[in-house]
Image 1 (tube, rainbow, N blue to C red):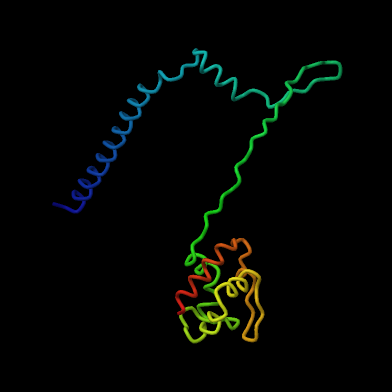
Image 2 (image 1 turned 180 degrees about the vertical axis):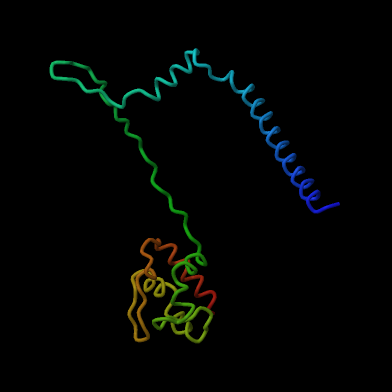
Length: 170
C-alpha cells in the first residue's frame, strides 16, 4: 500500500468522523428546538408583556402645564438586628492576636510555655495579668499594647486568652 493511499484513508476517516459529529449536533439542536418552541410564541400575551416590560422607558418627561400624579413613596422602617459577633475562645484569641509577640518574645513578651519567664507574672495573679492585657502595660522588659493591638476583641475574650496562656505556661 502506498503512502498516498494511507493518507487518503486517514483523511477520509477524519472527515467522516467530523461529519458524524456535525450531524449529531444538528439532530440534537433540532430536537431541542422542537421541545422549546412552544414555551414562547410571539402571539401570546405573556410574551408581548415580557417584551413591553423590557423595552419600556426608564422615565417620562412632562412639559410645563402637563400634570401627572406620582405615587407617594412609602418608606418602611425595618428594625435591623444587632450583629452578634461570635465569641472567640482563648486559643483562638491567642492565635489571632497574641501569637505575634508571645511566640517569638518580641518586645519583651514572655514566650508561651516558658515557665521561668511566666512565673513572676503568674505570681502577680491572673487579675493583674488580665488588667495589663486589656489596658496595656509598659514595664522594664517591654511594652504590651492594649488588647494586643486588637481593639475589636471583648474583655471576656482577652480574659480567656490570658487564662489559656497562663495554663500553658505553668
